[in-house]
Amino acid sequence: MGEFVRVETDGAIATIRLDRPPMNALNSQVQAEIAQAAAQVSDDDQVRAVVIYGGEKVFAAGADIKEMADASYASMAATSRRLQDSFTAVARIGKPVVAAITGYALGGGLELALCADFRVAGESAKVGQPEILLGVIPGAGGTQRLPRLIGPARAKDIVFTGRFVGAAEALAIGLVDKVVPDDQVRQAAVDLVARYATGPAIALRAAKQAIDEGLDADLDTGLEIERLNFAGLFATEDQRTGMRSFVENGPGKAKFAGR
Image 1: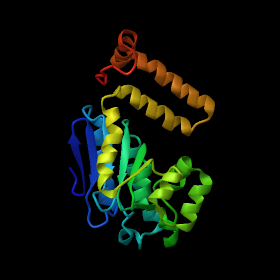
Image 2: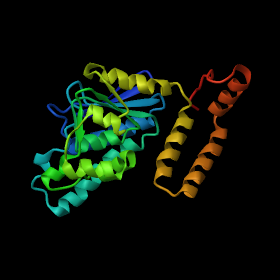
Image 3: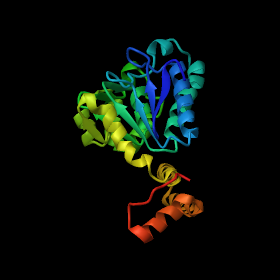
């Protein structure tokens, strides 16, 4: 358990909890602890779904600018690699992941949320990539994951202007998947992924891998990724359980072991 990032487990659902008051600024220590938390939930077979949560008031307001203000090109070339790697560790968690966004998710905060499979936001939440206002660009995936999610023109508007996007607009453009009252964000995120916590864990991991890797490949390569994952699932206990249950009892009644 890190100083600013901890993993809280409730049954099959783990929460990666950011806790660096007042704004969960993502300094180098927090980045390292995020990567450690991602590895922990990835390796724990008892964890079947994950929530990323920054608390009731804020998700994460971005990188620690004081830490970066006087950085040189040479130092930032190395630092930015570690930043990207820590967030990529979250994106590669082989389980359903939802970001529970309260308050602000700005800069690195939004980039972290983009690493999740789903995003739930409070009604007063604000998201954005304001790096351009500092004379730089997003450096932890914002120029890559954001356009893949909402399209290049909308992503360029958000990145070029640095403006804050309210929850209603974020929902309308597909940047978040659900908007709820501020005090219901964490529970709504838990409810969203709870449906997956009893699902076939290996098949869910394969589906996530096929979709994510396929998006970065041409269609033929993506279809091959899908085919290999599909065929591989016939070596699992869950495949036998699911198909036998379908034949005997109809759809949607299988009890999966996650093996």
